[in-house]
Length: 195
Image 1 (tube, one colour):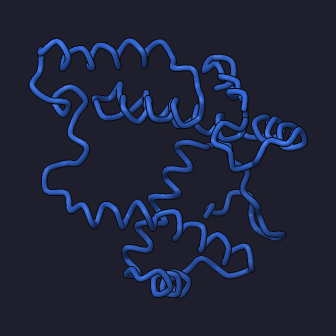
Image 2 (cartoon, rainbow, N blue to C red; image 1 turned 45 degrees about the vertical axis):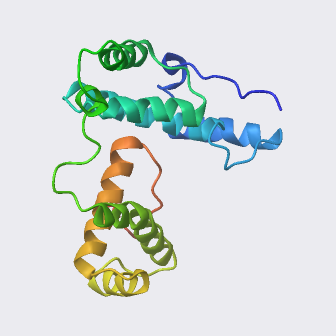
Image 3 (tube, helix red, strand yellow; image 1 turned 180 degrees about the vertical axis):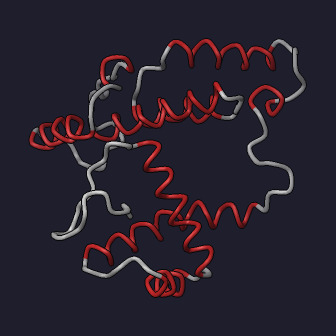
């Protein structure tokens, strides 16, 4: 199987969601599986996440560097120059014995005091909550306390955690895909709160 084409960060990062979707549809017509992480839509999403990782890194989050490397590997993206330079500089700090640990070079993966099981639960359930609420909302249900109660019970979390996970997922999507289309039901005001 031939290697997927490498996408250039500068060339494709400025696409809109609709442009990426159009490219994905073309690729699907040529036999590309929609779920492949190196498909045009997923590569574009990876580029948006890469922008967010760069902003986090520039704000002092050293671990964002490893997230960015992971995104490039996952989506068959060409590593941008900023990432290659910074990754090698931090990698060499360890291999040339300038720092004593990988954590010192790239940052701790979790803050002190983090309960790993709780962090895992949030990671695993964040988009389960989001997708379930979106599905029920698309079926005509209002996003309200009753819906949060129902989804919380269904997924085995409290209503408070359910609402927090919903907000986390929305925040991630807003940051990574700010121009994603949102479906509006007829009669909804254009400036109504988007769920």
